[in-house]
Image 1: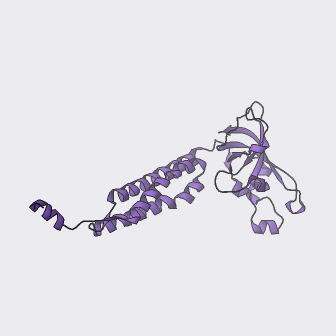
Image 2: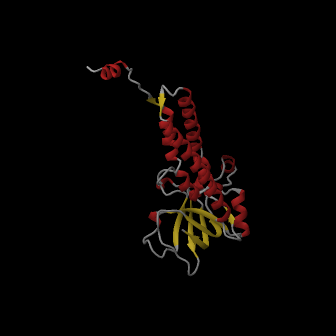
Image 3: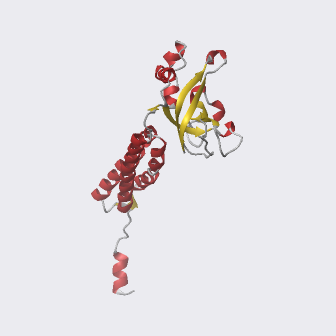
Amino acid sequence: MSEIDASLADEPLEYRSVHTFAVLGLLLGVLSAALLFMARVSFESTVLMAPIPVAGLIVSLIALRGINAAPDLYAGKPLAQAGAALSALFLVLGVGYASVVYATEVPDGYERTSFIAMKPTESDVVNRDFIPKEVQEYIKSGEPVFIKGYIRPDSIKFKQNLNNFLLVRDNQQCCFGDLSKVQYFDQIQVKLGTGLSTDYHSGLFRVGGVLKVAPGDPRAGTPLTYELVADYIKP
C-alpha cells in the first residue's frame, strides 16, 4: 500500500444526515402553491390555507438554524433555503392575489353574499328563522346580490347554453362531502335572464341577480328553496 493510500485509510469517514425539518419545510413550500388556486376561489379559503406556508417558513428557518449551529452533523441547507423561499413566495402571492380578486370581483351595484351567510345559526333554527336576517334583507329589498359557486352536474341535462341550473357551494373535489347530502342553504336555483346563458364546467362561477325564496319548513319536510334571477354570470 502506498503512503497516500495509507493516509486516506487513516482519515475518518464523514457522514452528515439531512436535517428532517429541511425536507419537511421543502414539502410544505411546494404544497403552498395551492394558495394560488384557492385565491381564485375565495379570500376565506386562502386564509384557511395560509397556515401551510407559514408552517413551511417556520420549519425551514428552524432547519437552517440547526444546520448552521451544527454543520458537521447536519446537511440539507439548500433544501431548507428552498423551502423557506417557496413558502414565503406563495404566502405573499396567494394572499396578495386573493386580496385583489376579493376587492375587484363584485360588479358595481351588487352586494356580496355567500352560502355561509345563507346558513341559519342554531339559535335561528330554534326560533324557526330558517333564513338569516341578512339574507332576509336582500330578499325584501330586491337588492342584487353576488355569489360564487359551482354548477351541480345532476341539475342539468346538457352542458351548453344553460339558463337554468343549481348553484352549489362545492364541486365535490375537495372538502364538503357528498352532493346528495346538500342542504337547502347549500344551493340556489339559478335562472338566467333573457339572452343570458353559460356552458357547464367543473370550475367556479360568479353569479349576480335578485335573490328570492320559495316558502317552506325544513322541519316539516318541505325545505325552503333559494332562487336567483340572474342578470350576471362569469365563469
